[in-house]
Length: 511
Ligand code: NAI
Image (cartoon, rainbow, N blue to C red; front, side):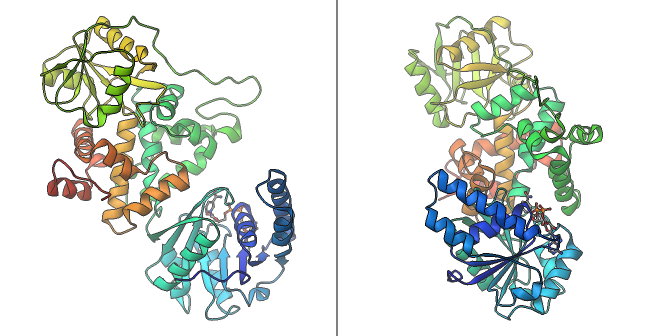
């Protein structure tokens, strides 16, 4: 399918944060861009801001001066919708309100030609519903950009029930031509990113409510062990708790109260208090003059342990960690104990979390000195590792395990003994939600991984990550979480179960 030709006219309606970004990107890509806003002078002011943004790009060497001048010349503010009559594509980025969007598109249908594509940048309204009153609903499609538009590569191309596939394909190809990474998705609540990302916030909030650790510690674990760019608490503070809580509520309500998406009473209290995050100077953290960020909990240095061996079956996904310990000088002889791969360190059994608490696992294995560690994105490079000790575990055994990882260069954080710990539980739930989106035909497995990497900067697509950890392990984690909490929230996606049934040892989502 072909993209809209360079030089064709794109009208952008609404010149706020999103509309001005979309106008900038379309103009740089070579389109004649018309910008319209009901607020007087807003479109012209937006064009002034785009000029400033382009000149900054020139200063930084990211764009040539001539290219910038040409792009800015292609931008024009219009004061009536009628002036958009020759547009090949109209992208709407007005207020997030169904009636306002329907009224706008109905009016536009009387202005533009029959071939003009109508696109909405809505982040939460059904594309099907916006298109419903139109004479030709098949030409309306979602073109969901991410903020800030010039920097974020993802565009979710959303098909409503009536959307013509050729229209979605043209918008996809056009977004690609604009240097973006588009993905196709069906119009379902939250589309891809705003749905699949929910567990990132929700599991963080649940871990905090269960007193696994304080926000600074959990954020450090998600960053330094999980490789996420920002931890959930600093990220929610940045987004604003009012906005984040409202998105969660809207997804929860749109799925008719599915417990997967249950909002958090802790976040509701922050909203009640007006502690909305950075913008009010206080959220989980304090901001402004003199506010210092609390440090993550880190265990005091412990002596290097002597007796360390490998236990259980083949290390599998633990191999990079085994390599790192070996590089730190541990000989790691193998002992035939149990089947789960792990380490025996001065008598303490050390395993990757499987969704049971360390306390339960110590009981199940009849081994008091049990310590679990959390998932690492890259065991070769991670700067921190999170541990949880069984309630029955002795101080000496725990300190020996801390000393083991410290000797390999990790900062060691102790989390309270919550099932599934922090990174593993979050990644398992992200993958579970991604698998459900694929299973329900919302998008492909490749699309969901691209969306989460390009739309919210995850270090790895959740499904590729689940493949790397091992689908059997991810399913075990989820099943153990479901058993621990007795909540439908942790039910395993039918797609994961099916893959596992088809190939119990080697199941993968991606071929
Ligand atoms: P904004 O409030 O910054 O800008 C909206 C602009 O639309 C304002 O300038 C307003 O005067 C204008 N406007 C309102 N009604 C209009 C109408 N009937 N005709 C013409 N102009 C009208 O809002 P923002 O953040 O740019 O969002 C716009 C749309 O993009 C919303 O649907 C929002 O949900 C969606 N979106 C927002 C994202 C964000 O992070 N801000 C991300 C992705 C989508």
